[in-house]
Image (cartoon, rainbow, N blue to C red; front, side, top):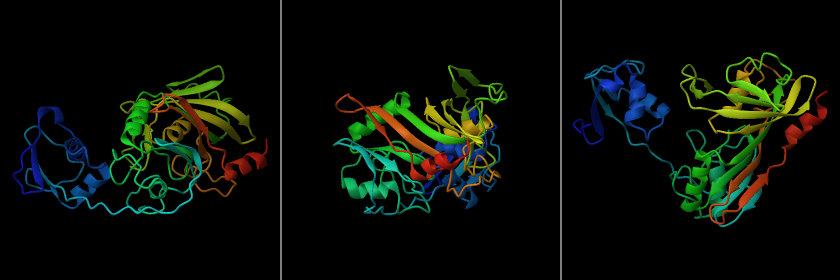
Length: 324
């Protein structure tokens, strides 16, 4: 790669290993520090040339092609500390575990620079947050969706961040969710016929790789070429039209439980992304999914810590009124 297109510009000669690759996917490899959506916008703005011409993101490159690109500097807004109440499940000098409410985004992103969990923990922790993930995600080592409630761990220093990140990578952190699913996957004979699905001792295990859905960037889908994803589903209570289940993550892919429950034909109640068109007879805001139990080895003491986030009021009410 050479700097022959100006101070903020670069060029790249396509090598044999990238022959036939889409231009947008190649850019993601060349510029790993930028999000795929940001690079898509750079392409749309005409800041990428293939052999001197602007082309579509889907253009296929060939060995020897010249890709020239000028990536504008990203303007990072100031993230303000906000006095937002936190439901604290555990706290010490190294880590903080909070019970995130529904409709709260974990970290700032376009369209959500205030009211996030990061804004709240910046106020609560002051300057005591890990800096490994940068100014937009101080202390954040994992996240849950905006409409998912429950446990999120915040790291107050880099030692804690590295430890928790390694535990996540090693799949040793205990993460148990509860969810309300459409129908009954435990008595559905079609579920166990799905590739990668098995049942033993009353536990449904879904072992199916997940990748980005090329047709809709908001979604993930089952993709044999994606990253391995494993979810263990245990029956908690049967209802007439729904099932209350525990979902234990063995891996932690984006939208993993939502994708896997859709895959077996029993998506999460209220999930308008993975169960579109299903109109439940309840007034819901997003999916009925709650990160209930979080267990980890303390980064400094080595002690095992486990927290439990109580089932949110809206879900508890549903479980009391749904007919059995």
